[in-house]
Length: 321
Image (cartoon, rainbow, N blue to C red; front, top):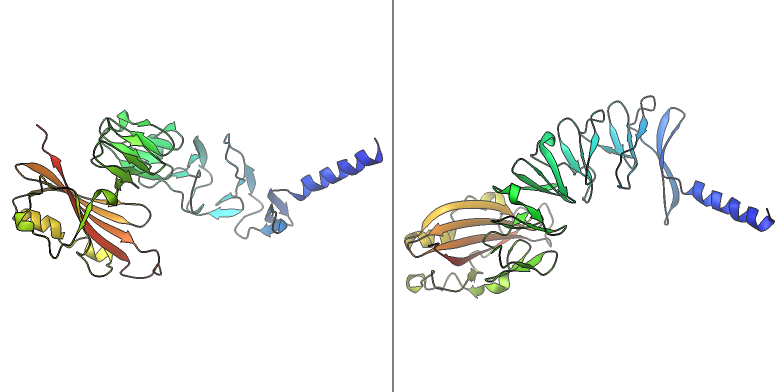
């Protein structure tokens, strides 16, 4: 071996050993070692770990995590994962793991400690195709769920979209009212059918004509023939969703006076912190959908009480013959 080859070999070994990532036990303490370009090699003690019972875990998963556990705790990349039983923790598939009580999705997330799939029985989970799964009537997308009544008809289209015979689904949102037969995907969060354009799970605001609630002539308007309308001035200021969601919806009350009957009301999440209240109403001529949109104002401090801008909108659906 030449001097040059020896130097290259030594440098290669040095680089490989200096970029170590994983757990290390020294002096009855557990450490996690990692490396990044900014700070180089790092080593920190895991205060909560019990060195006597600690061991590394491996799973048949293509996820890039370093798992470890002691008698009481689970660790991922050196971080304590709260409220998980380390002794029953195991891999299901498609980045879904479980313990005796719950299921967890570690494919994409905001925090490793906020990955629980809420409301599902881990014994009932059946994998579909990443990142889709199901449990009873719950459709699972990543760590989020929605309840659909024809779940056995669900077929994924791609990582973001799927459909059943009745519904078009974008991630964890049903596009209520979307026509399954004519729906076309235009982006990861947009699509269109024969009637409307959709964005982030709801009909795009550009499909609605902006009107003033305060000057609108309700007495002489046939809502079974009119174009979709959004009223932008129902509220003059930001509101609290928690306090406002049980208040009467102005459009619903107006339609009741015009002979419409309220069929059902749904309270839905809509993109991040924003919310929607969706009311279905019926007259002898048509069905009307009233939506009260609560847009979260991210420009305000998160502790702000009144942080939602509210609009109300309406569109009609012909009665099925």
